[in-house]
Length: 314
Image 1 (spheres, rainbow, N blue to C red):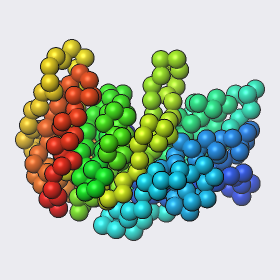
Image 2 (image 1 turned 135 degrees about the horizontal axis):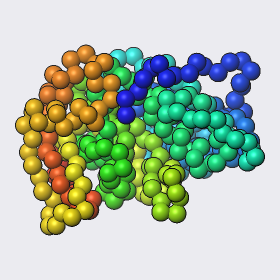
Image 3 (image 1 turned 90 degrees about the vertical axis):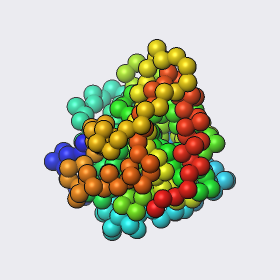
């Protein structure tokens, strides 16, 4: 999950003008998706659909298929004031190749994604945007590899930390429709306890799509953007065990054990000023982390409800 600035490509030259620009606001960062190549209008429309919650407000207002409900558009909150000036706009280039063209090798840190397979192109673009915004916010945010859901009225946010492919997206799909969606990938915590949303598409495994994830629009499964500004109310370290029987098993973690469990699931941690003190402060204010062992994400509903009902300690 670590983002390496050395992997970042230079901005596009003057000969690489985009056919379409899809403007996003992701993890507190403005991102312009420059769309070119074969069937560029179709690709731009797909990107607007999949990233509908992250469209910058002007773009969301102009979108012909934007939902009428304002809570389904980009959030009208300003969660970045406490994390310093906003980073410069990041450009990620999306180039759709014709079916007969062979795609070049792709790396996660690349700022240009080119592919003839539209499903793989959408997945790699999500990964490229994730890498780019993590790089942009390193040092500004305490970033955890986690899913997060918030109370729609108070903004109290439950943060569920886990490695990739262990159920974070399923958790958002299952527990999210009665709350608001903050992220299924990267949770950015500010020093004032606020949480900066990363409203990316849901990267979902499908048994009929070998080797490629389906990038689904959050609204397609009933998820909506935060209205109240999110703030971290509790942190849970997830441990999925298909053989686990009975209710979710909760284990309180002392601060040292929590730090040991959380730091491998962080980004830019050691390039942040005083990260251990920062993380310890978050843990102490929110009552400490807990490890949850579970078989099905539906069993986590009472835990999510308890955390999202908390009062702010910030």
